[in-house]
Image (cartoon, rainbow, N blue to C red; front, side):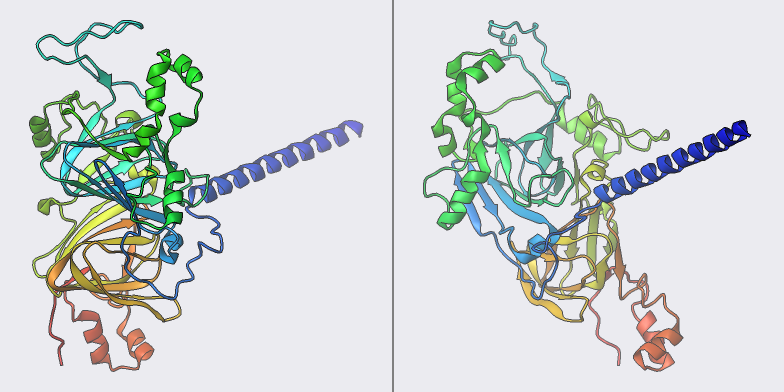
Length: 490
């Protein structure tokens, strides 16, 4: 009897332990899923209680010797709702945007110009090397024979040009150099709500050189100037000089140069005294091979989904794609325009950033079908032209009915229904989305929810005749997301 009792107790204890283990696993899995979602718990200030949306221009302008940094007001209700902070950088010819890193992912669109960008991933090797003798501490590196420059090694440098979308992951230090013949203009959206940012909902960047100058070159209010100085400064300035000299094993004088207050007076973008040269593969050959769908020679990166399910190596992951190729348009209408998308399928690094982007062109008087975004907020930037925009919230109230113009930006929150009609000169726009696999649901057109409903449902819902319901479903024919301007049938 005692043996039977002990055996029964052992079975019950085992069952209890298994049940507890499964419960813990279920909780951990649920917690992991919640942590993977954006904005699991928004503060009251971040909740999308919007009664009015308006297109806005940058409010904070930071002048540097080599360019301009413009910031939209992240405290605007629409940007707080989306949890984003937009910015625009103008880098003049032969100028360098200084190295910095930030705690949130940043998705960049190159509006104009071209240049070079370097992104330094933590723990990754220097895969670009010039032929040289091994460097020894305390000795100057030899110059390469016949080239008149010193040997070097560094992580990969990328060519960027107009129409590119560039992904900058959280925590990766990066710099950008304009080696073109015109200004390089880059418009960016920072995702403050991303799980990588555990600080707060304020835009900040940690600079490795330079900083916001104290002089009056900022066209902002005094409070904004102070806030900018607090958010964009050289982190080396606050370290002990001798401690840094020991860490780098260099003379203290070099560290003092890194820490000098005068460095910040140059700003965030500086002039390059002499042209910059760095190790790069042959660009023309690489561009041709990339257009043909083949990896660049010597590029050393793996394609995702090559048949065995392996993902790209993070150290050599592709960080950019171009949205201006007509032949690569995802949506195209000869009467209405075209749209190019980039998501985690085209640019796998976006999987980790949970962001995506689109660039669209609407011909004069064409429309974007009324629609809503299922799983993301949309941040819209007007690149050229103008348009009439209408946005409606869940209460059936019109929160936006404005004409938007070049250089302006506005937010369409998740599930808010919106539509856009281009002006007489058409419209070119860029959209950032807070999801790497965005989805939308359309109200009009071939793939719309209205067309998918039975005629009887529409007849009774709107108190119209079956013929009218049929016209409501079918009058756009095969047009889907882009709608051509048409005269209404009588």
